[in-house]
Length: 387
Image (cartoon, rainbow, N blue to C red; front, side, top):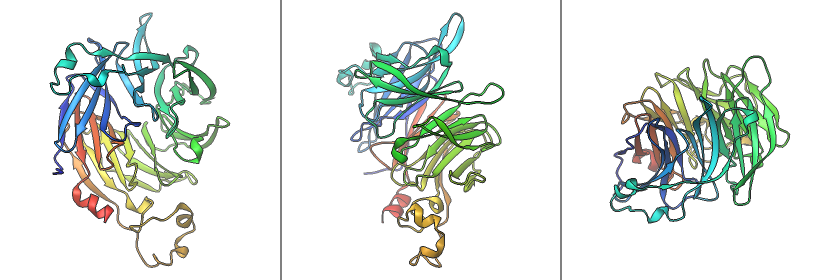
């Protein structure tokens, strides 16, 4: 029996790094990285049994420092990347590395969740993605739908494209791009586009959003003041190649058509504090999740700018050519955008939200106090979209 009630799991550690296990499409699995200054940090592997509404976890040790960002290989479900802080010569540096889960981690005890925490196994280091000449790494992006051989790291004002070789035990920088300009420019986040043969990257620095062509490592577009304050996160519409969502410290979520960056296509102002995370649903791009320091998650139905604005699929070219070509849709209004649900199971800043890669109607959110919540799209909306 499918139930809309949330399922809550407490990590007992502060945490802000969350990812779905991208290469795992059968099991509903999320990876969480902890932020502890006193104890060894950990990766919690969270499995969700949706038939019985039960969460089970396995813990792996990440002994090098507190985890700020986590990413999962799209090709190998045992491989992940982390960005973490370490202290070196009494100053804190942000590093990145690629890791492999020990081959037998799954033989850990699912039945009694406490056993695996007594003597957890340790992640196996595959390679560092540090390049001391390029400064502090803020995030690592895996090539979408790729073979797990290419990653991008954002370090201070540099974007580095890495090739992973020898089963990911060696990483070499194949090309770089840099932010040019006055002052200390630093990337805060980025997203590798799944479109255009994965040849484009978008990045945020301060209040600006930039697009990059990875074949030439040159800038394609720049939205100078995309947000009134810092841009926190970006995501591409999976079905409409020119559409991008952004969110930031001005409490807003904005949607852009990168062919015309003068004005956002739409702006949402539903949050009352910084918006840390924005995520398009992988299958139904009208569903957009946002997470904020106001302790809330909001699910919006952005149908008017989706690939199904009239309730059925319309391609980008038709949409760009204006309404004249829609013989069937003439006189029809696009469906109305709306806030579907506001989720209030968190009591602290919600730093991350991710859709499951195995179940398109399910998502996880993580707040700083270590609370992970698994929720579902309301059934009425799900059947409204499907039927």
